[in-house]
Amino acid sequence: MERRGFVKLVGTVAAWPLASWAQQPKGKTRRIGLLEPATPVSFPARLKAFHQVLREAGYVEGQNLVVDYRYAHGKLEQFPALAAELVALKPECVVAVGIDAIRALRNLTSTIPIVMGTIDADPVKEGLVASMARPGGNVTGMVGIGWEIVGKRLELLKEVAPKITRVAVIFDPRSPAGHAHVRGAEVGARALKLQLQLLEAKEPADLNNAFRAARGARANALYVPGVGMVNSHRPRIVALAIEARLPAIYSSAEFVGDGGLMAYAANGVEQFRRVATYVDKILKGAKPGDLPIQQPTTFELAVNLKTARAIGLAIPKSILGRADRVIE
Image 1 (cartoon, one colour):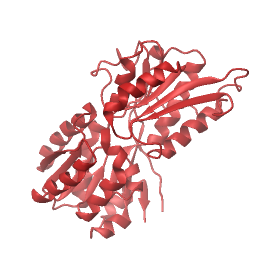
Image 2: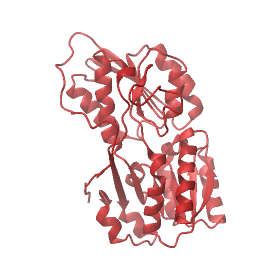
Image 3: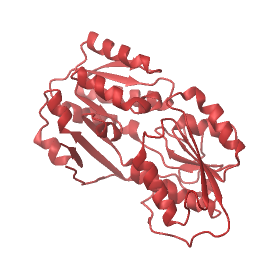
């Protein structure tokens, strides 16, 4: 069963209309790139929405649009080589997901437009753009603010499991976004009088070790920010959390679809619709430096009741009443 009831937050720019803005381009095949830290099957709904909006704008892959895909499969060290491959193909713009992918491209080109699919960090502080309103240079797009709502996630976790005292945080330390989530968790934990156990995971083999360490330290809850290597191994992380019977909250709703207990996150599909509008504008001649960077305007609470039953947890009615998506 799914229920939608969006929680509205203030964003920098309201959602733009998603209807067709122009007649189908004629006589020219356009070329774009996509650089993604995860795998081809990690975010199918986002990619589907992206192509749907491009089709509405007149760009059809295989007809008048070529998309060069590059996936890092969670191996962040591959980004420089993958970015170099894309730049060599001379696309008219590249959609890049995550700070590591964006930075790898930015290090290679100052002329090819880069549209951020999402970035869970402050692009101004990271030196990628001059400002949110007028980015300047060749980078624009969408940002997430997932690290700013970690405290809210921990509140939800505490509401679901009031007796928790120690929360394990499994994150990829190579990504600046991972550290941003940790800082947010530290602030939220102090407010809720929770202890944190920080567990680094750079490789898939680190995941088993992280869960063993969590059990050894008697962690009784889990927070997983979906950045870096983590997003490429969602089903495995979810399975380990269920096996350990840990109430867990995640930073993206895809974890809940994979069997995770709970997530509070921006609507990633909506963000990728907006990404497609920016690609369209750039293909029609807009300069990326003139397109303001957009923040999320909708956040969703997703709950998996099947997983709750599997770990012996009763989800309070107060949570179910606020949930936008409930998986039975």
